[in-house]
Length: 366
Image (cartoon, rainbow, N blue to C red; front, side, top):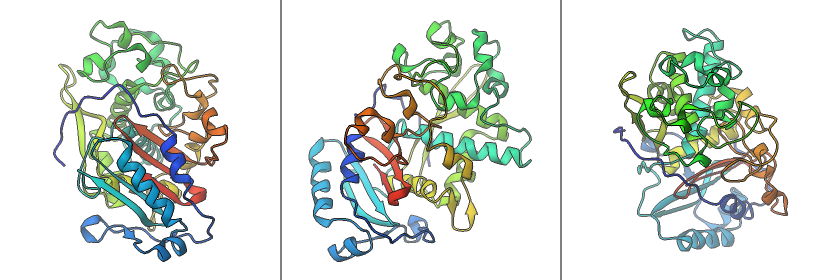
């Protein structure tokens, strides 16, 4: 849990081929385990299936194709990684090379964007229930919760909603502009004279530009709504209820702001899978509604009306939701890939991935 500062690599892997490959392994099965929730890894962790018969009967998976997937993962590149595939609450495939799926807190890169949006939804829900000092909804103006951003160099920023920070329609420093993703808080907030961070690339809500900077802003929104640093709130509101035990957070420094956590983090594959598994169960963990139901439902749909392509990766703008992405809404997917429309995933640079498909009771983390 030692906090580290890592640099955000300015690229992502080519999805959704990895998700497609795994979906090909699924069998039709009526078995589902809505009442199973794994204990923390230190107390036994995820249940696993080892025999071919169990994989077919309980996991609804083809053991031969799982073996093919294992070989593909090991041969696809030379990077160290840990990956898990979970069906009906069972680990049906676990592949490790140079990293532990239980304890290795490798930086998850842009996967942290999905985590951040999920944490912010919990903060919004608690605020609406009167549990926090300030109220916030995703339709509220984000900069009302970022006092450190004043003075704002571009007055259009004052109209950006929290939702637009999360679905890449804010106009804040899209990665297509080539600006570095990390720096001081003054740099991220547009106070260092760099027009790429000071000025918006487009009017909020009129285009889609993938933005790491927007999620750094979202972490500050969370801090000012909850009255606690983003990392502390994420740990207590999401990580601990799910039995997550290993993590670290990225921090930025600032002359005016001081040191504050951004959205970046590291987490093992088995712990990361717990977040997707909770989403797959409509936000519930045991008897507790950890993630708001409305967020789970809304994240399965586009959360903006922008059409066309995202600026950098050229994916369909309608495939971006609340921090999560919708691979079934990409033309590549619709061209015969059979990705279910309810699938959600978030890829990150370096081969990182979190994904879940409620209709298949399937969770993936790498």
